[in-house]
Image (cartoon, rainbow, N blue to C red; front, side, top):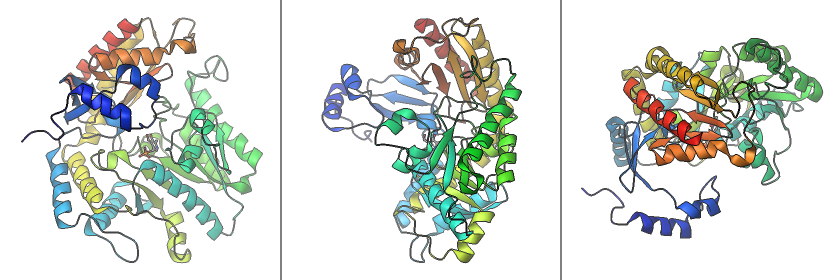
Length: 457
Ligand code: PLP
C-alpha cells in the first residue's frame, strides 16, 4: 500500500512543522532559515528524506537503532503483542508475560550480580529511578545522610529535571536552575581536553589514574559518610565519545569499594553490544551495583528503559523496603517488552556483539586511524562501534578553532547535505552506526566523512 503520511510536499510539511512542532534540543530560529528535514522511511543503515535522498545513518537515530531499520521480527513481535494485549500495567500485583519474560532474559544477559529489572519508558526515567533507589537504599541501611550523588562534567544522563541534574551539561543546567540539591560533579577523563592542562606531560594511562582520583578528592570534600553513589557512562557518548584510559574505571571501582559507595553504570548508549561486549562495564572491568539501559533494548523501535538492580540493593529493597513508592504507567509496557525480547533474539541470532568486537569494531578503528593524515584531525578515538574525530586548527600545536566558527556544526552540515548523519559535539565529530553495518558500508561512511572534512577545511 501507499506509505503512511504520503500526499504532502516537503514544503507543506515544513510549513506545518514550523507552525506547530516545538522540537527538542532545537534552535527554532536556525531551523526556520533552512526548514526541517523530513525523514520518511528507513531500511538497514539508511534513511530517506521526503525528497528521496538516501542518508547513511551513522548515529543509529539517536544511538538507538542498533539492529538497523526494517527488522521484520521486531515489527511482528509488536504487532502480535498489540493484537493480544496492547497494554496492561505492572502495578498492584499484576504483570504481563512479556514484561516478566524480558526481566528474566535481562537478568540472564547482565553480569551475575543482577537478578532484577525495573522498567520505565526512557533513559531519563531510568536515571531518575536511580536517584530514588540509591537514596532509598541508604535510608534502609540506616545511613540516611548518604544522599550525595557524584557525576561528571559533560555527562549525559537524560533530560528530566533530575536526570539533567545528574548530567553535567552546563547549557542544560542554565535552564531551569539545575542541578537539584545533592548532586555534584567532577571533571571527565578527557585526555584531549586536558592536553594543555592536567594531562600535560602525562601519558594516557597516568592521566586516567589522575582523573579517577578526582573522585577521591570530591569524596573527601563532601565527606565519605554523605556520599550515596557515583554514576558514569562507561564511554561518555553525548559528551563526545570520550573513551577513558584503561586505568580509569578500575581505579574508580577501587575508590567506590574503599568508601562503600554504590557504583552506577549508565549503559543507555554503551549497552547491548555497542562497545563490543554486551555491557560497557564488561569492556572496562567494573562491577556496578546498578545499571541503567534504554535505547538499544528495543533498538528504538518503541520506547523502553530500565534499571538492572544488583542484589546488594534489590535484596534490601525486597526484604525490608515495603512498598517502593515509584513507577510509571508504562513500566513494563508489554509491547515494548515484546519488542525487547525480539531484539535480543536478533542480536543473539546474528551474533552482533561478537561481530562488533571481532570484525566491524576493529575495522572501524583501522579506517578511523587513516583520518589522522587529514590536516584538520587532532585525535581519533573509538570503542567498538562508537567513534570520535577531534577537529583541530593547527595539528602540530593542537590548537582549537575559535568557538564562533562552530567548526563541528559546519562539518555536520556538510555531512548532512551529502547523505551522512554524523553528530558534532563542539569540535568533535562522532559516529555510532547500527551494529549491523557491514565493512563495505563502513568504507562508504568514511568516504563521506573524508568528503565532509575536505569541504570543511
Ligand atoms: N543516558 C545516556 C548515556 C544517554 O545518552 C541518554 C540519551 O541520549 C540518556 C541517558 C537519556 O535517555 P532518554 O533520551 O531515553 O531519556
